[in-house]
Amino acid sequence: MTNSEVTSLMYEVFIMAVQLGGPILVISMLIGVLISIIQAATQIHEQTITFVPKLLVIGLILVFTGGSMLQTLQDFTLRIFQLM
Image (cartoon, rainbow, N blue to C red; front, side, top):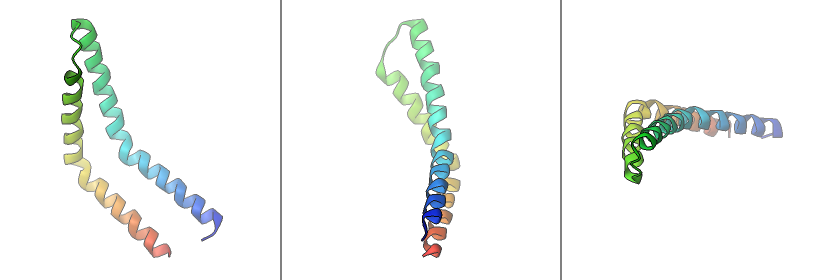
């Protein structure tokens, strides 16, 4: 492999990591901000109040999009092995 091929492959890995992890991180961040606003308004500062909804939402996202994420990773892995 040449340096340009390795650079291109690393760029694709970075883009795929953002595509696969980005939605989960953004949605969990939005849930955290929403719950923080609710906690500030009600003055209830319990750690589990933020943890449980995030866990449930991330679980639901993975249930609905996990198959396509796995398929994307499998296709990419096969493409890498075919390069060698």
